[in-house]
Image 1: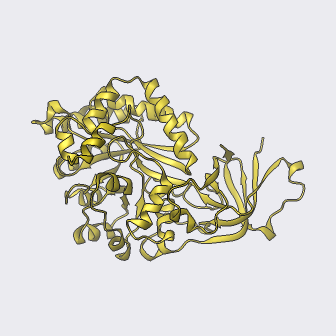
Image 2 (image 1 turned 90 degrees about the horizontal axis):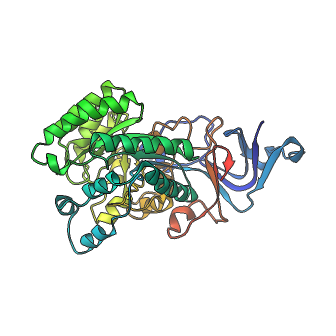
Image 3 (image 1 turned 90 degrees about the vertical axis):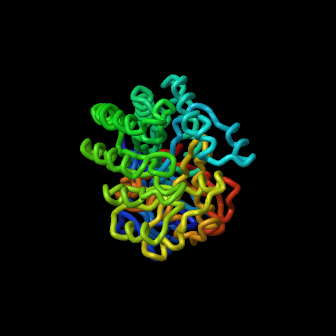
Length: 417
């Protein structure tokens, strides 16, 4: 049976595309196309028509089984795409937060067995059912803030059994949640304590044991490595990515959060879909990215929470690069999946225009998940993941009013949530 929605009297329909693009680079990011006093038609989960209200066909809609939503005074946006999260985890880490307040660095906390290793222990002690239940609550929350697609990484397992457990949880979430989910294998998130003096042995386990099983069970869409100071080296990353690509796993890289690690360059070398964090990005890194299909992705929540330097987004965009933004939702360095806040931080902390920031959390972040052909903008044939705002004066109000939820109605897969 056909299910049809017709949104009418939309104050402004945001980010419409007649000829959809996969991503926006440099100056292209400063523009978004909108239609004022618009309609949007959705059928069987997909966008079928949109345009000015004068062109909407509302006559006899009820008799034809079409549900009409009057969006007078409200705007409609494509759902946010959150291309970097760790939202499958067991419990919070607010005690480490206190350590941060007292002056301990991210690396110091990690050396004491905190950080990622703390989450690994908690995850080991939790059942798959418990992890699914916690994650579903987080997914429901981020949907209420406008997120319609999310990438979720493993990486709190750090052994074969627990990494596979995490990825099975993500597979279950794909079946249970209306949000579009992509899965990333991140066995190289941290070095377990027992391998601190023999890191290459742990890399061997990732390559020889984890990757083959992940691929055999079809548990991941992508592979990731934390290539940074105090974590995995350029050489480690090179070996892991080469092994992952043999199994068809495209890379997404944690890079240059803590120092100039070479992570960006190794990501580009292996045609990574994205390189993420990027606090330490200089001329060489920008040059490397300019000649690639890799999406530079910044994570404002982590830089803010950890009190770090901010990635040079203005330089990146002005050089002609595309930029995406994601939440990095995780218990240690970014305990929020609120993409409205990320949108605001793009403007406040990175000096992005509202248009650039909106593009960074929709079409460009969709690209960073290999989803921009089906999500990230309002276009005929794309999946109907959109949200209706509360009455707001302008689309610039979305990043401006950073402390409140401006989303009133969430539509995922063409269904009101």
